[in-house]
Each structure stands twice: as structure tokens, then as C-alpha cells.
Image 1 (cartoon, one colour):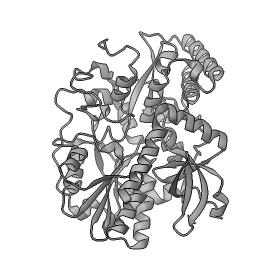
Image 2: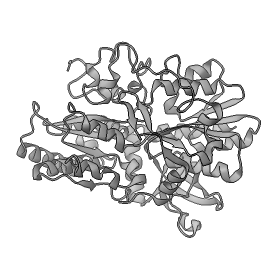
Image 3: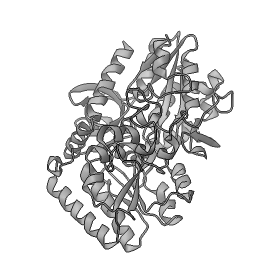
Image 4: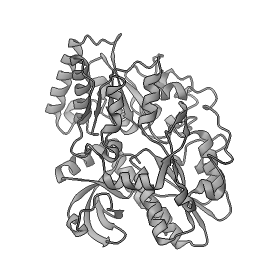
Amino acid sequence: MCLGIPGRIVEITDAARMTAMADVSGVKREVNIACVAEAEPAALVGRWALIHVGFAMALIDEAEAAATLEALRHLGEAQETLEQIAESARALS
Amino acid sequence: MRYVEEFRDPAAAKALIARIGAVAEAIGATRAEPVRIMEICGGHTHAIFRYGLDRLVHEGIEFIHGPGCPVCVLPMARVDEAVEISERPGVIFTSFGDAMRVPGTKKSLLQAKAEGADIRTVYSPLDALELARRHPDREVVFFGLGFETTTPSTALTIQQAAREGIGNFTVFCNHITVPQPIKVLLDDPHMLLDGFVGPGHVSMVIGTHPYDFIAQDYGKPIVVAGFEPTDLLQSVLMVLEQNRDGRAEVENQYGRVVPEHGNPVSLAAMADVYEPRPSFAWRGLGEIDASGLCIRPAYAAWDAEAKFGIGYGARRARDVAEPEGTRCAAVMTGRIKPTGCPMFGTECTPETPLGALMVSSEGACAAYWQYGGRRGPAAAE
């Protein structure tokens, strides 16, 4: 819960609510972008972000995203986060 | 993984280990009289064990595991209060998965769920808010947990609920802050620490200045670190170099993610929604002044403590210091290693945890159990 996971912002879903769709290791997950939003949210599309409990908290470059993801896989945290995202989707259904 | 060859950048890791060894020799660190470095963050504790860094570095370096695992420091009374709320009629109680198995004095949330309470594991407070939108006839409560890394997420969610006028969503706030317990540890005459590895993702939110007192008032080095093995090794080296040079500074090894002044949007949301409690209870550390956050009166409609009349300022569950026979508090404060607890690995295992340190992958006991400490589970302290 304290370690974020890198994801790539692929689409702004609701600019008023500051939400976007992110690709997190192949899983699509809606995230809040308020903490990383620049003047124009659309400029975030294609950028990598460190995502904590559904909130993009810092923009990072692609190399940093890859390195962080590898470290998280070693710790088992990447798999755990993806399971939590899947379980949360079930809780909503 | 205890072989540097498996690291992403083995050459860099080997070079850092050699430099750590050289500085450790230069300052006379030995196994009998080690340099004691506390990593504050539970994620760092997990990474140190996963990569075997405690075994790879010079034997004169001792890692002391700090209180930076939020579910590990959650008092049993707060788990009891969460269970009590979850068992109210009409409530959907939502929580991060980490908190489900943390023992209360009577039961965990997982046991309450098995007994029929509607408790759902969610990845994000946003999902709890979405549940409230979809179930307007139910009361959806989110178990707000964590340090400054997760505090902005619940603050922004409460602001969103307020904007939309969602009246069936509340947060049971247990957010805590990093600097205050560090001060308590530094004030403890039995805690002899030579420096700190600072939390990376907490600092991403709050920046590096909240640690200035560690260097300025206590004369100890602190280096904010990332989570890759080379980040941690680099940070240990930076702490040792400060020790060698007689410096005490706040340094930032994780500048690629941590801005000096933190994240302004997060800080503004936290300041808008939360204020410090006079004090908050920590498992193993007791009540610490201004170390926990509560929801400001302006947002009382989204405060589970106010709505359900439970917790601080209202009727409180009776707390107990630690489960019978365990030494959670001594482990929590770094006074003993997990292997020094009589219950470690016997009564208390990840399958049947007595204490929270054995529940979370970020807890020192779970890390010792999974990867083994330097001195091994067989050796007593």
C-alpha cells in the first residue's frame, strides 16, 4: 500500500473530476491525476506516473518506470498490486 | 536473492558495497560496535531483506528497522473500532487488503467478514466512493490508513465527495505522520542511532524539510532513498560518509521522484481536510503528540468518528499494549530483533499472526520469517 506502481496514462476520462485511464502492466485502471496535472491534462497522455492507491503522485521517465517495476516484481509488490486492482473491480460489481 | 549478479546493475552494486566497506573500515565500524542505521519505511525493510543487503554490506553496519509500516503500528483498539463500525446495520466497510488480517483484541476484519459483516477489500478510496454512488441506501465507510503517502488520496476523495454532495460516504481516519515518532525514538536514551535512511514515497509528498530537525536538533544524518537495491546502498554510503566527515545533513538520494518541497497539490488537500490530533496511539510506542490526523469540522459529514460516535473524542475501545507473550513493542522500537521474541516462529507465524509485524510484508517479523535475518532465526539475541 505504501509502494506505488508505475503506469502509463493513456486517456483523460473526466477532466473535471481529474481522472484518467492508466495502463498498469497491461491492466487498465482509472486513476486520479490531480497531483500531477499540468495546465492542460491532455498533455499527460503518454506520460509515465508513479501511482499510489489509484492516485498518480509523481511523473517519472520511462527508464525509471521500468527500473521501479523490476524492483517491485522482485519484492512481489507488483503482482500484489495487480491482484488488489482486480479484487477491487470485483468489489464494485 | 543474495547474489549481486541478480541485481539490475551488478557492477554499480558491487562498487557501492566496496565503497561502503572502505568507509566502514575508516570509521572503525565492527560487528561488536556497529554503525546503526534505521530505515524508517517498511518498504525499505522489505527491500533490504529481499535483496539480502544486510548480509552483503560490511559487518560493521547494522540495520535497525523503524516504525514505518502503517498497519504494524495501528493500535488494536482501532481495529476493534473498525470491526464495530463494520458490524453496524447497513454499513459497507471498505479497506486496503493489508489491514484485513491485523488482529484486534477480539477479531480481525477478516474474521468479522466471515461472521457476516459486509467488508470489502478495495485498491483505492476512489473505489469506496464509487460504491457509495452505487449504493445510496447503504453507509460506505473507508478505513483510512497510512502515512503521508496515502493521506492525500483520502483527502482528495473526501473533497470529491463534498463537491458531489455524497452523504453516505465516510472515512474512518487513522492517518499518521512520519516525523513525530522519529523524534520519540531520538529522545529515547536507549536508542543509539547513527543515522537514517529516509522514506522515499512519504518524502515525495512532504519533501525533505520536515526532517531538518533530525540533522539540526539531533545532529544525525538522514538520506531520503529510493527502493532499488542500488538506491539503498547509495543511501547507506551517503549516511556513512556524513558520519566519517562529522556532518549531519538532510540529503536526497531519490531526487528523481522527491522534490525538495514535496507535492503542492497533495499538501494543499491534506491541509484542507485534516488537522493534527492532540495525540494518537501507536502500537509499541504509545501515545505520541500530534502524530495522527483527524478530519476537520468543516468535513465532519464525511468523518466516520463523528457519524458513528466512536474513536477519539467519543467512546473509545479499550487498548492493550501488545498480544500476550509477544515483544512487539521492543521489536517495533528496534530494541530487539524479531528473533529475540519468544513467540517468533513458534506461536506467531504469517499464517497465524499474533502481532501486526508478522501480518504485513512490510513488517520486520514477516521479513525475518520470509528471508531470515543476518543472525538467523536459530540464534538468540
